[in-house]
Amino acid sequence: MSRLRRWADDVLWGPETAARLVIVHVGLSALIGLRIVRYPYWELADTPAALFDPVAVLGWLDRMPPAEVIVAVQVVGVLAALAAALRRRPRLAFAIAWVCYLVLAGLRGSRGKVLHNDLLLLWASAPFLLAPAVTDLRDLVARRRYGWPVRSATVIVALIYLIAGLHKLWRSGPDWVIGENMRYIMLWGPSIGEPQWPELTTWVGENLWAAQLSAAFILGVELSFPVVLFVRRLKGLYALAAVFLHTMTWLVLGLDYWAWSVTVLLLLVDWPAVVERARSTWLVRGRRAPTAAPP
Amino acid sequence: MTTHPVEQVGASPADDPPLSARVLVGVLLVLLVGAGIGVEAWPLTGWRLFSAERDDTQTQYVLEAVGADGSTRRVHLDELPGRPYSNAEWAMAELPDAPDTRREAVCQALLEPVIEVEPGLAELRIARDDARLVESDGAWTVVDDLETVHVCRPADGGGPEQAP
Image 1 (cartoon, rainbow over the protein chains, first blue to last red):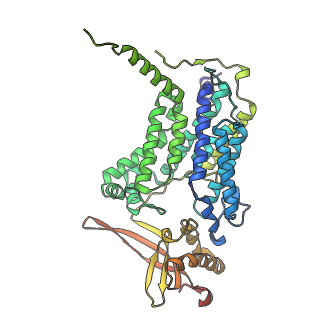
Image 2 (spheres, helix red, strand yellow):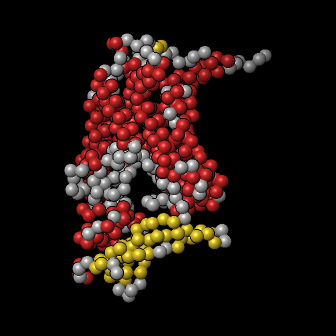
Image 3 (cartoon, chains in turn red, green):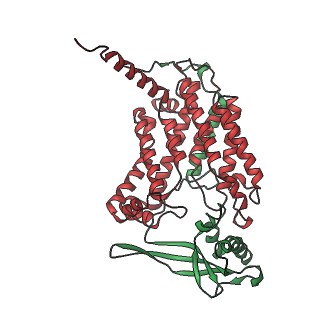
């Protein structure tokens, strides 16, 4: 097998522990449940037919469904997400929750504007539709059959950030960073919603160096994101960078991308290893600590 | 020193991901990269997040409520009740090239919620605004340049009216 092929095989299908798979699966289920329950989707039912522009996957609809139908989809989706998080028929429950979330997010996006708020979670969750229903968490051996959903979802996330960065370069070139682009993004503000920290939005807009630094950070993170597929120890750093990026986007533009942050944290951080490391450190410190005062 | 008691096993046929997993991931990657080239068919998307360079001009579509006394007020979509109207600017942006029936349908769809916030409304204007940001003494202000796209009135106000 060539080196490149071995690398691709490991990146997409490499081994992970059962605990890691279960934690990511449970986390994504809970996140989907939260996204379903937190948005008042039923309010969309009042959308006039003239303002309804269904997304492709809902193209068969000619108007928003009634509030009762939307609430029913929400209830089924939340119960299924809860069941998946509690590991009750996890594969079936996760699939139902994912489909309900797809429909609801699609309805939210059926008002003319392409919305990306829910798309990273939907795409990153898709491999978990066929994830094995692990029952033996005591299995500490990292296996390929446990690893592929986490690994392939990580590839999907890395590609999404890369494509977003490449589009900025294709459409705007280096001026996206070195021009006044970010200044005007800040000064114009969001087309929908309000900044959470308007003083910061204005400050970045009025200080070109801060706007250019912000733009360089965003484009740098997006274009270099696939590095996590080559250098595993950088995953934590990129997870933090993504959280910072999306938190700042929320503060200065009021845009709701917290689902992106949590998805990246779930996938890029090996939580069982973090817990194990913290436990070991705590135990070592406990052993070194003096048990009695010297005479 | 490793603190994580994880063993790794070499690849064995029994441990391999099933064929269905390989097919699913293969399809997802093809769709993701294919759509990334520029297809917009949600949930397939080009991921063009803020990719267009912004400058000091911006074309936006706005609502102007005209009172019985002829006074006008800009009505922001955020003011309208509920969630259905927050993205209505995208529907309004298509109106310059749309037939009269479509213009009137969109205008009438917005008329009802606008009346809720502007009860004395005599007519509603949908306008294209070629706005410009201007700096003066360190402060940035927006200079509007409005062009009416369509005008509609409450049901008893007669039929659709074209912009001059």
